[in-house]
Image 1 (cartoon, rainbow, N blue to C red):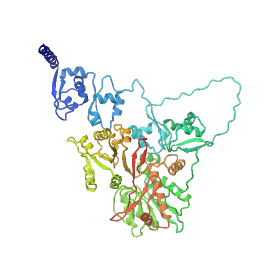
Image 2 (cartoon, rainbow, N blue to C red):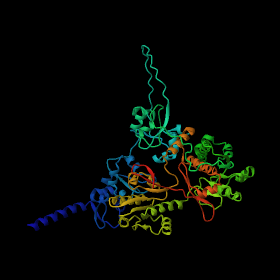
Image 3 (cartoon, rainbow, N blue to C red):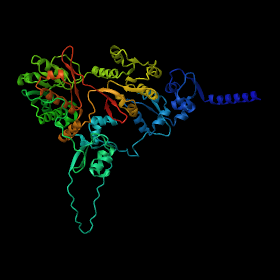
Length: 638
């Protein structure tokens, strides 16, 4: 009887298979094959294959058999199937919004996304019952952005994937300046506000009560303060406080400057006249002279008959950078004078391009050798020429912005640490902490592999598979339980980054782990990479600037905004730091070189810790080691 039943089942299976084979064919999966490759081979879509093989959505196994619909049969299916070819700079977020599909649904229809990430030229299957959004019948949803401290037009445009020109076109009021708290339109068209004209009514006149005039002051938000605590201290309701400060609608952030009644019971800020100073002044010496050689290029601007000054300011990034640096330097000069620093400052137009300047003319007309220190020019080639010109006078020439290593001139001081110095700083930190260091380096970063092997032989390398992806088992095998495991990642490939992070996340319960990079990585700023996971892995990296929330830094920002009606940019803060640091060094009764040999300083965002290069000249190794903390802030590693 058992044999009879078995025979019937076999007959039934073969009957069903025979019915299926009339319309479908089969494919044996080879090692390394993907659904997309198989679909292209048979001229069908991945969706067609998933329809007949639901288990394939969980991944393909070598030697497994797939049912493949024949082309004629596939046409019935693909009538409702939508595909999308990935273009450069597209993100999952943008594609999901375009087709109104969830992240989960898109990844379910395209399982390779989870492991390999989004690839240019890749064909995605868009789950059925979804169509690309159009703006014909449904108006585009308006997206707003509130401007926060330290944000720029560039950073805001980059965040939303638009150009600066598009941002300014939608918000013409920001063309001259960007102000904190401004409500910007990113997408869509803001609804027009109807003006309601009140109807005339015959009413008895009401004598209004005269309320005393309320004066407001600016208050910088301190750590751990909330909207509730601010409203209590300010004697206002939370609603009134937000109405007074619209930026608070998006949350309270440390360092935000809010308006509050003058009578508010806020803790009084301590006025620190010696803010940002690590050196005490010494007036027992002659008055020192500092020269600033900045590339305003006024002759070129005055001779420009095509562009107005306004248009030039909009287009010329180099001029904007110069003006920002200059505004910070002026703040430094005022700050130094307020505490009695006896240093004179003169400012000249260096009229420079990358390969030319008017330094020789300035030297002939103004005797540059009489200066004690010179800040500038900006371009490395020009600052080297200036240092060489004044070598015999031993005038300190300070390069404020160049990242080039350049020539080793004895009196030249490079303020920006080199790329190699950044790498060494983070490795020295990990070694000092006694950590177990593992490198995950993709094949396109051979120079990084060579740097590590030549300088840090104790670093272990995780193996890569034949297709260039990380071997998760290799990484796990290198982890140590009784130490902090630093995983140094050198890759811009979305798939490798996600796979490395996923592997680390899977073993966090058993090991102490921290993800490390030592150079900027734009891929980490895309929608493809989970910011929350970066904080869980405490992403660590070296930086020439820090996130300074000290009382002194907040005072600087407040005073800068008060004077310039805008928050200080990175270049403005650097202009302040370099200029103030130079003036304070010269106020010690010593030469600039003597203070450099004996003292390291720290200003608002920058650290100046110079060391003498073997072949001459000085370079800065003032570097911060920063990390993403789980409270979504960036902190300095101790």
